[in-house]
Image (cartoon, rainbow, N blue to C red; front, side):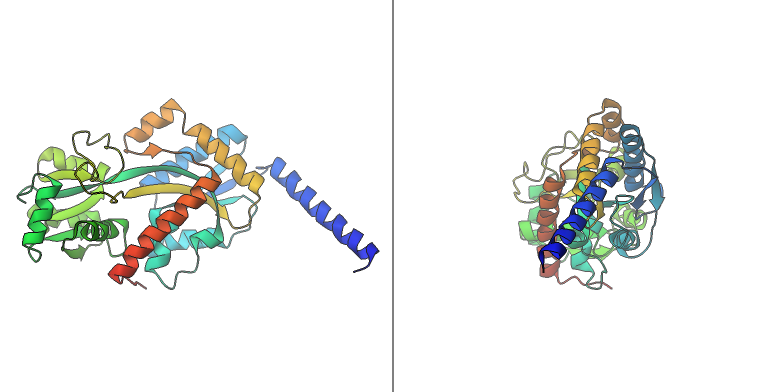
Amino acid sequence: MNRRNFLQAGALCACSAFDAAVRAESYPSRPVQIVVPFPPGGTNDLLARMVAQSLGEQTGGSFVVDNRAGGAAGSVGAQAVAVARADGYTLLLGNTASLAINQSVYPNLRYDPQRDFEPISVIGSSSLVLVVNSKVPARNVAELVQLLRTSPDKYSYASAGAGSPLHLAGKLFKYRTGTEMLHVPYRGTAPAYTDLLSGRISVMFDNTTTAVQHTRAGTIRALAVTGAQRSALFPEVPTLAEAGFKDTEILVWFGLVAPRSTDATITGRLSKAVASSVKDPETRRRLLEFDIELWGSTPEDMRRFMASESAKWKAVVQRSNIRLE
């Protein structure tokens, strides 16, 4: 390359960098879509709408929730964002499944969370709760573990579907405690609860917000929560670590990501806006009803967290030999 061409190339690079900086500085200049890969009404949808409102207030822009349900555990919406333009105008509000589990469970998945997304922020997380039918003769986790070790063929656990976080939570629990239970997958939590309440199924890991109504009715018993701290909905129920079982922390978490190569100025600005929004007392009060602990992480912290979560669940999936189409 001669000197003239070198200088021209340098000028083009400088102009491109300048244009990118200008676009980032004026962002957002048009509506931003936050894709939720699930139907309206769920926790993902609720969080997305709260985040959209807060980001709009802080940036002066317009953020619109776009529900794109379909595919395996939200894969349609996640895939759409993975191939979208990296201009900051299409974002994904994903969760544990779409950002840390699916790539290990579904070998034909058409996106890789760590390769195809730029992290923005982990918005928050919630524990699961380990529950048993009220007739199961176990008042704590130690007694349940003893039952499972004594009669490994007698007890089974339900989940909302094969490859779901609830399924893998049961697998991780079995591996950490050296126990056996038959897994029975259902198409959603409603039919799973039908059999849990009737006693056809003995054990289940579930979201705290769903389980609490049944524990209050006395039809099921909560033995432990899976987070590092006790749940606001189950303050009297110990964590698995408090019950004596280490390395069993299981979180359902929610995060905001952008397509790969989105300008760091944009992701950084959005991350700071999320961090500011989660400090709002009214936001925290509203999400406490859903037992969600707000985080507001940096992009770098989210990248590390996603890698750690992906590695943890990949090990469980491989050990369990789970492969779904």
